[in-house]
Length: 271
Length: 305
Image: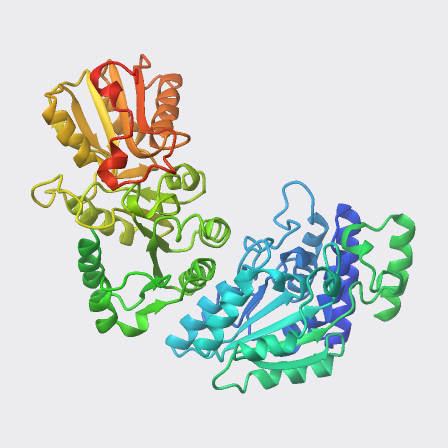
């Protein structure tokens, strides 16, 4: 496996994701693009794992709680050798393991997600087990901002703060959209950072597409000796393809041939 | 039943530090011996059942055997999707224990009736369902539950249930169906949960000639044993302190149909289900008061009200 920069990895993830979603005529491309840089940094520069032994006991755990961005995770897993790159072409096709919402039948995927609000409670259980067993691995969770409407997120947030799950890092893909519009119009999350602070979390914010900043923020969370950490990563839905950026439409629409060709051109230019 | 639960739990936890007990802020004056002995293996997660079920899945996927405990519908229906997605889908080694099955908390009202859980939970994949009738069955049911590698749901009474078995059961392992009365194999009564002792008294009082079986392993229902038990039966009656819609009687009926269709039984016997039909919401009383609202007439040869 050639070691590439996280920027190159991110571009490859976007291109794979575009091809998968186009080929399957499926949706959620913009949700995949907003989280891509976070995934690239996590898998390239942060997490400990062994793609040849995905259930290695001391691996860091990654949970994508916003399971609808599964295609991007499959793409990074393929780039990192968990699954063959060729297998990505089966995404969304009959008989595949690469279903539209994340599946733990795929090597490297810890848990299946798809219904929002499930990832953080499970992560709390994993973090608690690691803490009690004095293990050094960490639990990384990606939530979407819209997902934070779910009460179970705040049940878990309260639990993690109370039990001082210092080994838990949450990154929020804060693309400011949820399924039917802007989060501020549907159910305003603000003051978002203060909410997490008041639940006894370390809170930081970053540009969710600037790799060095993402990396610095995540590294900092690893120093916590007490509190769980959350990074509110400000992202742009559809990031990487100019005409998809900040457009809710691409939560749903699958690119037709013309759009696909234009998007490929933009993404290939970035590699 | 709860006392037996705690005794068995203490025994297991003393041998296995990976056993965790999570409660949803219930179990006051029940779990103190466990908390005292195994403080790091006990977590009161607060009144947050969705989180409790998710945490349990996370712990189980990290190698723990996790019990989650609360009353009636709180550890089941309140967090149904977490049980479905996080526990059952992942075959996580989580044991869901609910106290207050049926009308155990009758005087507390409908919110506290456990009368839909079997119907709803038996459709979930990978989930085994246990409903012991008394403390003796609970002891073996707990051992079955803890030795299973995967999700199990066990429904218990609230407290001071009547004893069905005078002594601890002689069997080492939990039987799927346990004979209680054997007087007449033409009429087979299959009963589930703590109502079985209430039913037993009714049968004795009325000198009914029947075979009565307690069925502590509700799901998966033991098809071979059922076929064997009913092989001479002309009439089969199921009894449950639970909604008729989709409940234990429905499960037995579906299974009999399957047995008939695949030739394991020759005739489909006369069949009656006794259980909760119109759940009382406004006329509330204690457990026996509410049990007496159930239509038991099928026991006496007619179903008329």
